[in-house]
Image (cartoon, rainbow, N blue to C red; front, side):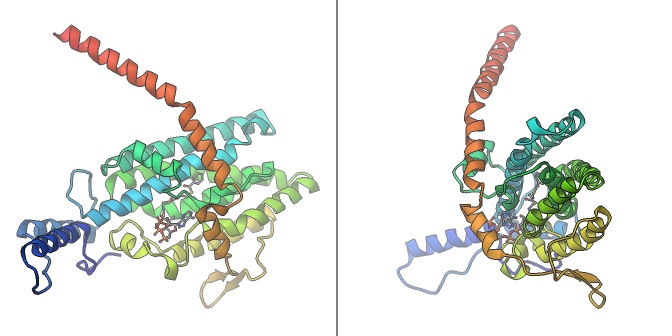
Length: 354
Ligand code: BYC
């Protein structure tokens, strides 16, 4: 939790420092290093912001905020939004092949929910002054990240259930604390997202329960899917705390409430009993209850694979990006038509009012 005055200078103070340094460089050839100057007004704004964070209050779009806070939120919220809309693809792939009308209806609703989550999140990011076009351009050109988990293929119907159980389960574990994040629009968006994710997780688990109570072949299909998705889900929480460059800032600003490793541990502890009820084996020989720690111990995650996937070399990176770019291009005529209609309507209303 944030408790102390900032030891890392915020963006605004930095800008002031840079401006002051530039001015000094212009006016003097040599001399002492310029000391950053913050006006009394600026210092007051920083203090008010710090106090709001320390009091666990919410920062709203119209409030003053340090540039570093704005930037880290834009980075996280836009990546989160991209994850939602790319996350529609692996499951969307199974809509035409769902095994019954009921499963098809559930899957369509779930994929639609993910699209909705993307929209709330893009809207929340827009309140920070970044345009949706810019965010999408960053996604389409590979400048922005989206969750590593969506760069893997969904090979069987059991993968769809496992995504619900484990991927959505991991997403909820990460996202519940975000409902208390310091930025109001993000926190409010996350409340609705978490309610829907929790339904997604339960429907995934239920569909796996049905398969586990069925034939030997179906049980084997579920086990195979669990074997392929388990370790990727653990990696979803992000790099170990010691290798997480953004955590310190996120925690200090009340955006992140728990570290990557803490959330990963919570997920393991919650999931092991669920796997037992389901009757599947989690693919980790080192998974053991540790009485002293009051937690499960687990084996080593393949971080090389994680970073490779993040850097564009996962099994489906190229396919996922190409699909998003095509969807955007194919939807251009809809956006053009909506804009033309809005302009026509505004012109008619203006004429009528005149
Ligand atoms: N995938 O310093 P770190 C979902 C990046 S699923 C890709 O620890 P931070 C859904 C990280 O961005 C999940 N990239 O970063 C579920 C950073 O790169 P940059 C989406 C990852 O921000 C079902 C670098 O690695 N959820 O919603 O402190 C269906 C170093 O990491 C990943 C969210 O986005 C990863 N797994 O912590 C549909 C939740 N992990 O930006 C959809 C909100 C790390 O410096 N986000 N990186 O270039 C968060 O809570 C945090 O941003 C993270 C990372 C825990 C993900």
